[in-house]
Amino acid sequence: MSKRLGLQTIVFQQAPRIASCSTIAGPKEGEGNFGSYIDKLVDDPMMGQLTPEKAERMMLYLACQDALAKAALTEDDVHFFVGGDLLNQIISSSYCARDLGIPFLGIYGACSSIVEGLGLGSLIVDGDYADSVLVATSSHYQASERQFRYPVELNIQHRKSNQWTVTGAAAAVLSKSGTGPKITAATFGRVLDYGIKSPNDMGAAMAPAAADTLCRHFADTGKTPGDYDLILTGDLAAVGQKLFVQLVKEAGYTLGSKHMDVGASMYKPTQQVGAGGSGCACSAIGILGYVVKEMLQGNLRRVLAMATGALFSPVSTQQGDSIAGIAHAVVIEA
Image (cartoon, rainbow, N blue to C red):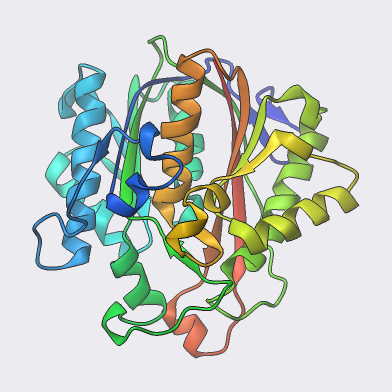
């Protein structure tokens, strides 16, 4: 129990290193604000495949292979692959695991999957159950649209609260050794439901969970916003970000310039993406692209990275169920 801190936070005594990481994304993401932080940009979001689902799978596999190569590891050197995505039965991650041949732990945290994976991977390494763990996730605009809303061929008019699913993938190798940033703690969140039912307003559905996890992290650790160079949320986008900031303020915390939301910052205003970005790759690119690179350049020292997920399915929406939210956070230190 000595590794537990408060109700929901774990402190890693053997803080695992992000030994390597890799990000890949499509042309729209390359034109956005994080384009220079993405390792590989592709001109064709379909990757030469017949379906966007297969294109997403290929992106995820390439990100995993690149992360392994950067760490000078092969598949046989890695003890676990922790992966998740948005598609039914996490098929992108499952097929990628099939091709990698690494023992697979499939997770579903929706868009929070990258931080859930980093937290679980850190638990495995810190517990001496593995020397190296591969963590990865992916998403694709076309695949997500037709699963959760409408086929893009129908050209449905989006609402201003709609978010644009990031087309891309990201992977990281967590290891006991190396010189990369350390993951020193994780705060695993609770599922909260404020009764929002529209899949066109996921930011508002996720904001309460994000505020709850952040406040719990502060309560568990005794930290304040001033203890971090950056508090990064994943994909609340414009609508959810405003609600999140208000809820945190009502709880007694003012974030100010310490806070940035990847979804709200992913694209430029001229790209016409509604409220902003979302998807598993949104948070993943923000953390494994922007945060890690800024740390390696000495611009960031300690970051609280939090990713949010909207826990719903096409079936639950069609049955009139509300959309629950989840948020997980990890502390990353240079």
